[in-house]
Length: 117
Ligand SMILES: [Zn+2]
Image 1 (spheres, rainbow, N blue to C red):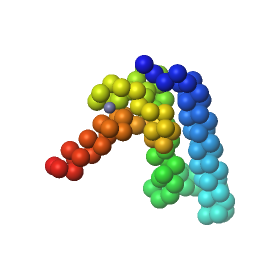
Image 2: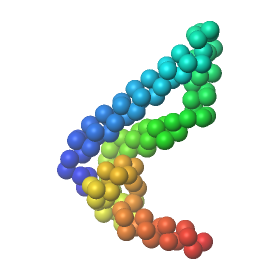
Image 3: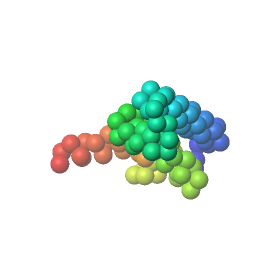
């Protein structure tokens, strides 16, 4: 069973994704103005996007990726379900980790196992 407020969660994820994408677009434009004043052509934009990918705002890009995965799970009906025990993951946890695949208990067990390897 998915969380009751799945539509709200979905909307929040979409809003957050849009916000992040706008932020990245804005930053990439700022970077063009700062560094590429003499040559604002396609080439400049391409290299700016490349350096964007490589160097900065990894956290935003990672968050977008996490949101995209969470949205995919909402679409296929597995969002908010622990992959180990099939129990719903708490809303609080999903808020902090929108792409959480395990409930807190299973995550702790999982990490313990990892640590013992
Ligand atoms: Zn679990």
